[in-house]
Amino acid sequence: MAVRIEADLILHNGRIWCGREEGSCEAVAVWQGKVLATGSNAEMLSLKGSRTEVIDLDGRFASPGLIDNHLHLISTGIVMGWVDATPAAAPTHAALMRQIAERAAVTPKGEWVRARGYDQVKLDTGRHPTRADLDLAAPDHPVLVTRACGHVAIANSKALMLAGVTEATPVPDGGVIGLTDGKLNGLLAENAMNLVRAVIPSATTAELIDGIERAGQYLLSLGITSCMDAAVGQLSGFEEIQAYEMAKIAGRLPVRVWLTLLGDPGVSIVEDCWRAGLISGAGDDMLRVGAVKIFLDGSAGGRTAWMTKPYKDEPENLGVQMLPDAVVEEIVQSCHDRGYQMACHAIGDGAIEQLITAYEKALAANPDPDRRHRVEHCGYPSAEQNARMKAAGILPAPQMAFIHDFGDSYISVLGEERGVKSYPIGTWARMGLKPSTGSDSPVCSPNPFPDLYAMITRQTGKGTVMDASEKLSREEALQAYTEYGAHSQKAENVKGRLVAGQWADIAVFDNDLLTASPEAILSDTRCLLTLLAGRVVHDARG
Image 1 (cartoon, helix red, strand yellow):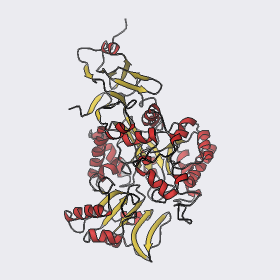
Image 2: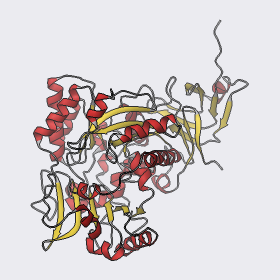
Image 3: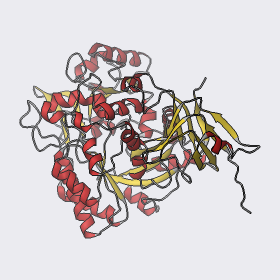
Image 4: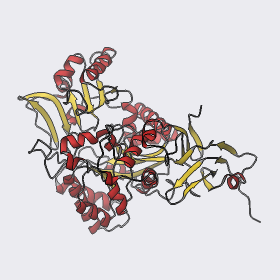
């Protein structure tokens, strides 16, 4: 006689999108943290027992929990305590300086003032802040203001003095030190930023755990149940691994995290992780070692992404090549041979070429048809590079929030023809490359609605259409945010869809993401309820 299983939880009376192939249903039953079954209200309620919790969705739209394919969880949590330099909070140069001055006024003299999020293209001045600007705003504090992309920062005189940076300081390989008329203007790009970062006090383990918890709770409030931390070790080295494990043990890890290990020369934590047995796949579905990351170039908006053609109005500027070919190929081959998946930063077509070539060589020397090496961001690939990615099983991992937040900046620095073709997610979807999506927070907000809006409209925040042929359907956009996010982590069999046996990670929204207008999705949508493994972890139903 068959044993009847009674559900632990039933969500019913909703429009529940289970996945692109599965479509929608009315109800879902959960048992032991995983999806037991999906179907009609009557079918699922027949699984109700005396202890079953029942949630009436009241007609609301639900989907698998969203998966942000690339963000910096610890940094997101820590930056939440800095000066907000985003265009929304500081739309003008004067407003930005005022914010910095106000923070300095309540910060003990000599302590650091940090800010992040400005975009010079969106400031009324149309330029980066300068060392002199920051000196006027905060004369008694070292100040570092980081551009939204994280690849350019402005330091004031006290910060440069503490770091020992002068006009005579050698420019680090893969870096830029800004000069105006032979004098430091405060701008530091790529590896040159490390000169100042080296003298900023490191975050303590307690601060790292606080950042993990703070950012994770914020993600849950947005319907995001899984993410990739895109550069573990960037702030505090191997201690970040300890912080994650301690957060998990203490019940302070709110979301599922796929750890990407920083592998750049001089700051790599890969050897420490290798000795500890932390290779790709180690861990569990809550906290798992994912890939190794190295940076090959910078950002397009900051004019440091490595391009094969120069930036608009700067005929000598092809961006920044961070590492020689031989070094990239050696790191990729070594990590590949040890069993690591790779997820390396490459935005410009020059960097993408370098990375694909290294992946191809590693795969040829040691074949693994399902390693799923990733190209993080992958902003400006050629058609030939896309075809090579398809042939080699390489995955593009873009953040489509960039189109909404920075699309107009891309046109400004690259020109119309090149700019509008940024991040060709429609092309990748049609090729079967299974593109995922995310925010790169704190580069962009982890808020998923601008990302969804950009995928289905290809419009920037100002309304510029960035090549309409790259639009996705609603279902394709949700698939990128769920199933394909899981696929990029080799986790498509455990999360990303609402099917029997997968984790019951569920997000409930107050708008139907399959039928609401793009404008409503962007500006008038909230996550009402988030469940992780069938447990309510965010509830904003009132």
